[in-house]
Length: 448
Image (cartoon, rainbow, N blue to C red; front, side, top):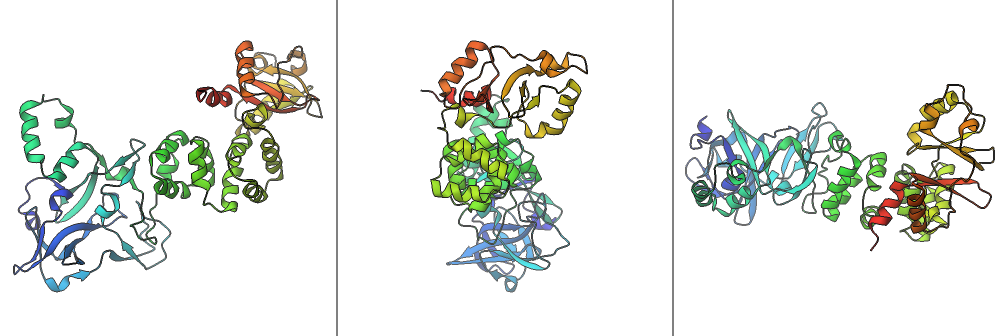
């Protein structure tokens, strides 16, 4: 295409276009390229306009008015087509739902101001959806598609840095002479496909430009991986990404994040919003989070929880020190009656499994929730269908602990008796909860 007549390579690097002179067809100097406005609704965004700067002012010209685009200069057909502005105003139609980066909650025929793509991602933290990590963008790759130009990759490699410094030709020449052919520098461009890029806006991006970082790709990431991503972001990026998630995903992710970062994520959140997140957490984990807030804030958040049972469970857990069994235990315990059969217990497991963290042992209680004994799930599964649990449960020398017992005592107890979990009971032997190995492990790992 004539517009790219001076560009023989297939990939165009933004770093090489930056600061290139912009001219009119009659040779009038108009400024220098500083950014590109792109169609963020496309997975591989097409360039809509070229932004340039001259003597204190920002201008842009629609791509359709560009007659020549190269690393030497950009030529505009008619200087009268130039518009002034730092952002690109575009009418977004309800019939065209944005698919990438920008919010999909746009009214019909709304005018939206887009930032330049370099302003949005260059030298910024982004979430690499493919690698499930936070990376920093050093350059932007574009390709020629007919007379159009499309963004295809975010460059996160060393080559991008060297290219921006202007040393790429020298370094590439030396590398080919001195490095082996299979060296990482020569083979790896260090770029990620744009379809995996999710940008996190900073304060320099206008508030009314909402980035859709909470799409289904983000929410399909495992909470542990999502927690790693959040912890690698700066505080603003962390809040931006976390705030766009569904409350259930927020709850699952919050459970995986370091305590100090948990508090920072919730410190500016309205009590009713925090309550929705807390309500989706296991009561013991919710109590751990709330223990970092002052009493007035805790009372306000708990008052916004609609489920009275959840309210009571969390409040009870908050009454214990966080390093004791009462502060660590999970109140979600799978318990059955002494007269229950294998068949009824298995039906109960099917109906309640979503609310139970794990079922290694089945705890047998009476109608006052007094612990009578326990039976392992494996023991139950190997018995006949009509067996009654009281006939196979262990009811002698039951290993249990009190809610005030320190976590170290729990750890020693579990190690001594080779337990996966231990029931926690009060003075009347009422079953209050269980502490599992998973609950103790974080305390043991953090021990100095």
